[in-house]
Length: 375
Image (cartoon, rainbow, N blue to C red; front, side):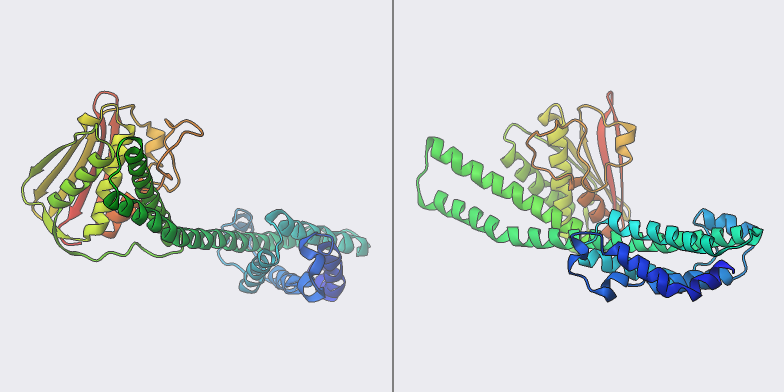
C-alpha cells in the first residue's frame, strides 16, 4: 500500500499514538484533555497525504528539500502554524513541540514499514515525500511558535516600560520639589543631584525600550513634523549633555540654513543619543564636534569624536537593537540598554533621511546624518 493511502486509512491509529506521546510531556500536558493533546495532528497527516499525491518533478523535489519549493501546501502550513501557536499557549517549550513531529515521523514510518510485504522503489519515494511534508509542517509550526514567543516578550516589555514611567516620574518630581523647598548643601545636595540625574537616565532608557517594542510589534516610529531650526535643537542637546557631563565642552559648527520641517522631539532624541554616545566612548570629552550644514533641500548633521575606533564587524551591527559596545566590560555600570543608536536609525528613517558611520584610529569616529528639509 502506498504511504499516502496508508496514512488516510490509519490516521486515527497514528493520532492515538501522537496523543499518547504528547501526554508524556510534563508539566504542560498534565491538565490537557484529549482534544487539546491531539490538536491538529489529523489535519497535518491528511494534508501531508494530499501533498504526497501531487506530482513533483526531480527539480521541484531538490528545491523543496532546500526549503525553496515553488509552492507550499496551504492546508499543511495552516495546520502546522496553528499547532505551533496553540502549543505555545498551553506551555510547551520549543523542544517539546518539535519532539512531537519527530515522534509522528517515526510512528508513521514504523507502522507503514511493518505493513509492507515486498519492497518497491516507489515506496522509498513515498517516504521522501512524507518527510518533506512533515518538514514543511514543522517549519511552519516552529515559525509560528517563535513568533508567539517574540510577541509575548515584546508585550511584556511594553507593559514593563509603561508601568515604570509612573514611579520614575514620582522620583523625579519629588527630587525636584525637595531641591526647591529645601536649602540642601554638601552631601545632601550631591545625593539629590545624583537621584535627579539617575532618574533622567532611567527615563531615557524606558523611552528607548518602548520605541524598540513599538518597532518589533510592526509599528513605525510616529513623527509629527513642524517647522523648526535644527541649530536650536543642537544647542539644547549640547546644554543637556553638559549638565550631565560638566567636564564636556562640545563644539557646535553651523553653516548655511539649518531650518526644516521635522519632529522636534524625535530630533532631540537623535541628538541626545549621538552626543551621549560620543561622550561615553570618546577619549577626550572636550574634543566632541557637532557640525550642521544646510545645502539645498538637505541639511547634514555630523558628530565627531576621538577614541578607540569601531571595528568593521561592529559597524555592521552598530544600529541593531540591544547591541552593546565591545569596549564595555561585563557587569560595568551603564546608562544604556544598547538601544540609543537603534533609536537614532529609526528617527532618521522616519524622516526619510540616511545615516552612515566611519571610524579609524587616525580620523576618529564620525556619524553622518542627511535629512531632507521636508520630512
